[in-house]
Image (cartoon, rainbow, N blue to C red; front, side, top):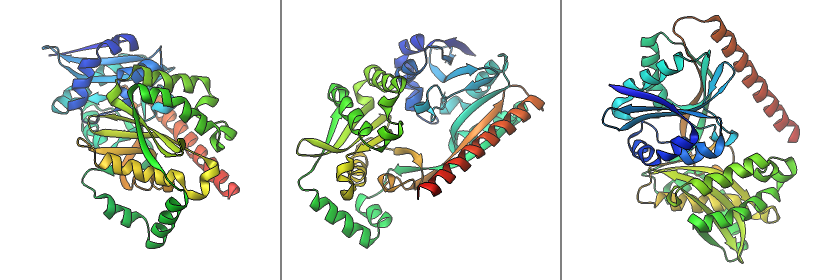
Length: 354
């Protein structure tokens, strides 16, 4: 017998220990489903929790209700949020959660980035419940996976000519050092990261974190609430100044390379690429490392080149009620059109900027 309850972010935060145990057994561990991250993102969010009678948490699904749609993206930086589903009780948990959503006055559940591994387990459950699932878009994201030798994949992703260029750039940069900041040291260094990012093209375009007060507050609060072992900042330093910095989240051997910024005055040395290579060395040598998500489309640029293993993600819309629904069909069509229009505009802008 399973018990389901709906809780606020503050109550969810009090269950952090139970969530940590669930992360260890989840089909897909997810830092964005962490109580600290959810608490920082949305005060009006809700979380469905699924408990066994013995008090073990086996399911958690953070969401926000937006009109007739349930959305798992509580913040723009939480687009990769997925529910935490215990792998030994997956079908049971999916069914309980979907039944809970069915009782709400909604048309659909929107999950912008559902990993293929989770979707494969969800599909037969939806089929048995006669609930539709529409794929709005798909994208391969770049991952760095365990078991790879750094030198081998470095020689695979960069040609001999590119490696010679990188070697010369590193030499011309002068003396540099790769530094990792954890816990309170990372919290202190966060302002350095904000300044570095806002001083570059992201700041000029208005997309740097601190260009938006809500975004800056969100990241600051996430680091404030998260335990020290679940995040770090790292930097490629030269003369005590950062040439490039990155913010990385981690949990249970999985890592998320959320953000990177670099010193544009040193752009001729490709500091972002050299930083990413140092980060790759670090995570590959971590004793509990399993995989690292670039949080970017595969092949986006050389600063995520080490993240070269493709993982398929789907933007999905799940009908909250069984059998055919005209409202669900119309909603899926509308959302798919919006995505296609946005992608067309992005590609057009890229061509113009070239």
